[in-house]
Every structure is written in C-alpha cells, then in structure tokens.
Length: 339
View 1 (cartoon, rainbow, N blue to C red):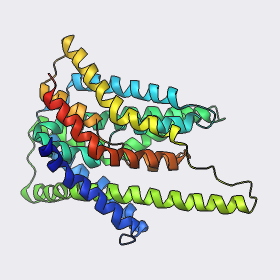
View 2: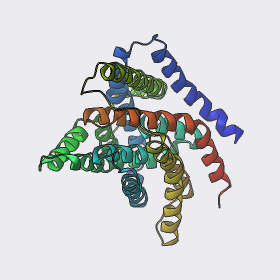
View 3: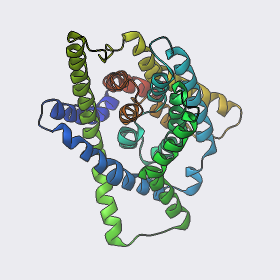
C-alpha cells in the first residue's frame, strides 16, 4: 500500500501545483485554455500514438475489454440518471452527472499513472476504454441531455454535435493511426519519431498540471457566479442564479464514480471470465483501476457548452479528484490481495 502511495503522490502533487498556481494568480485563468490545447492537440495524441504503435494490433481489438467496459459504462449512466432526476435536476443535468460518473480522467491522468504502476502492458486496455468513452459514453450522455428541450429535433442535433466533436478530437484519430502503424509495421523517420517522442514525454506533467488549473478555474468561476447571483437577488433581478447544488445532488455521484464503478467493473469482469471471456489478470486489474480514477475534467467544459449546471459538475470533478488521492491506492491495494 505504501509503495502505491509513493507512486501516486507525485501525480496528485502536480495536480495540486496546477490548482495552486491558477487559484493563487500565478497562472492567469486566460492561459488555461492554451494549456488544454497543448495537451489535447499535441502532447496526448503523440503519447497515445506511441502506445498504439507499440502494441500488437490484436490487443487493440480486444473484444472482451470493449464488452465489459461498455456494459459497465451503460449501467453506470442508467443508474446515475435514474437516481439523479428530481424536481431540481432534469435530463440535461442528470445526463452530465451520469457522464462524470461513468467517464474517468483516463487521458489526462490514467495513461501516465497506470503505466507508472503497472508498466507498459496497461496502455492497451486504457486506450480501448478512452476510445469507448469518447465515442459511445459521451455521445449517449449528450443525446440524453437534449431530452429536456422543446425542440423535437434536439436529440438528433445533439447526436450530430457529438459526432462532430469526436471527429474534431485528435485523440481517437491518434489511436487509429497508432493502430494502423502497428498493423503495417510502419517505422517513422528518425526526426519525426524524435519530435513525437518529445511531445509524448511532455504529456504527463503538463496534463496533470492542467487538471489542477482547470479545477481551480471552475472553482473561481463558480464563486464569481454565486457572487453575481447574490447581487442580482439583492437588486430584485428576475434572472438571479440558482443556489449551490445541495450535497444530496453531489455525493451520490461521487460515490458511484469512486466506489460503485470499480466494484461493478470487477464484478462484471469476473462474471465474464467465468462465462469464458478471455481476459488476462493484468487487464482485469487495469480496467478496474481505470474505473477507480476521478471524473474526467473535460466534462465541465462540455456541461458549460450545453447549458447544464456546471457548478455541480465541477464540484463533483473536484471532490472525486481530491478523494481519489485516498481511494485509488485503497482500490489498488485491494486488487493486489483479491483472488
């Protein structure tokens, strides 16, 4: 257990450093989108390409991982939406709450952390889960979020927007290109390979620092949001903003993400293995640890874009990240002793 803590501490320390830098003003909030662009469009795609190119193509097409991870993601989305919807939370907010419950921070945090703990063998199942969550889980939740709309074409429009977002996201394409390089045995020119390697090596520290900065930005914007609401209410404005989400709207989603999700993946994987699905023990450990990661930080930006209660979503992301400092090593230690 202590050894796992020693591995995870530097990762969470970089997140804390990014949070402190943005919250303290050393990193201007206006600079955070630039960090996001570097990580999302340059560093992480190069990291994923390298992992994909270095893995046998058969491993990248592991149907067992897709089946287990996909089934669990759909269950988490369905359960979270069912538990979340009430008079305060409609389809839009419930859908994005489900997305933060089902979508771990795999790209920014999971790839470097799991490779550090488990070695390079963890990269392939991690890549598979990233692709599924980007293409299926995100699209499903965005489509569900439109069910509140009066426009009868809202669902179809949301699906088109989700597909357009996937097409514009470089990470799935980097996975595809890496897989093609693996299948064809492509060897890049030395100068290009070195450039990709340098960008890939920058991905881990910058991505972790960026997570902290994004969380700080969300916290600052939420505080300014609340201040505006107080002023508007004092002036009798009809457009006063809603109060902070009650803990009852936040804590269940946090529990689902950090406790229910990894236990569900473990249970479904064990059942699938008992039914004859081929799954290596190392792959089982990897996908359970992926499920134990905190919520993906980019969901906050999606929620803001689609008009959901971003303060609630940012709060869930923040507290899953803080709590994961303790819960993730516990899950890793439990897996070490599990049969």
